[in-house]
Length: 457
Figure 1 (cartoon, rainbow, N blue to C red):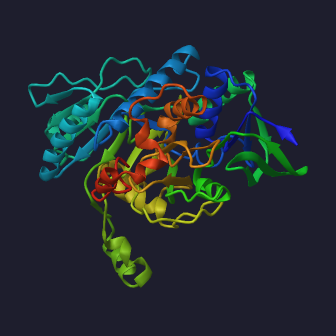
Figure 2: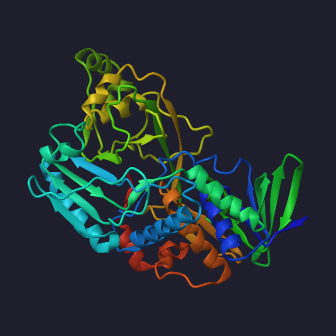
Figure 3: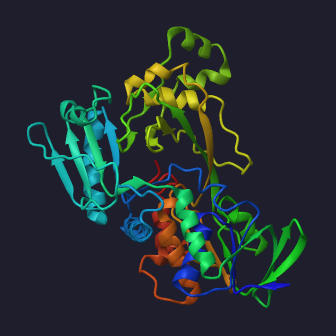
């Protein structure tokens, strides 16, 4: 029987961040991280690896939480020589719908008021807009810029559709290498005493109403690790791990994919930000294609209108021509199946949808080559906010349900979890992430007007 002060189940970015903050920042050396897979290989490396402080309410909880996490990201980038390639290229939301222009203005006003930064308005002949630098993360600009009119927008982004009429550009946003961020924190955690065990948590021993140990199955057989502190950071498996402790966690999983494909024609410049089309889309089909799709009941859905949100960003350095393209048009709850299985039409759907924003990409329809499709599961709560803090079993903690924002939230989430474990001061928004929030009657009332896509792209 081995012994550890703290056992963490899960070596994704959440579990690694917890290990980093417990060891490198809180000086607890005997921390054991358990995962049956190599670190950062289940979900954490399958995202777009982006971050943003642009979050809706209610309240300023998520803006404050993510702002602090970005602070930590910038601190680590500065101290590491930007080992994980943090940039601040921003996000760009675009619309061709006059009705959506007002929603852009209203959203900007609300989110700015929650602490995301000031709003700057730009019209033709009255613009001081400057695109974000493609490299670096030290821009003083926060908040967002609102641009109006196709001519002005296309002055900076001439490849977007001519009927675009408004652009919202949040600034404290960008992307990084999640894999390298995770390994940077994990290397520091291991240098301060953390260890990694390749194995599967198969059971949790509870005695006298508290955590007593963790059962592990590995290549060398079954074993028991004695510990009084256990952290459930198992990503899409947090519910199953919770059940081992007799705790029903209110979470579910969605499958989200992304596509990598080459843009050899250079339709999209390499220095652009993450770009999102904010209007619903009907896919462009030829008359013959439309007739074929109509002929079969299982393909007729491809003729329907798809929701807003198709987006992309450039991927890679140097002479790379790769684009990452994504579209969350299916948010059904799913059971975890590994490896994940994606709709055969997914690449074609996303590419065709993206041509609404970037007509030049039509050159790749039916000529996409062999795109790489991968992705992972978003583990989510009903309101798309995380679970971070103690569980109703002494010595048990949760760091999970970080949905599609686990990379950007990871540093602050790990720090908050570590503060709970050692009994340190916690921010006043911390109760909003505890499991007990669902016992609050006022919170229950708020949930009635909330949904699991809140803040999700």
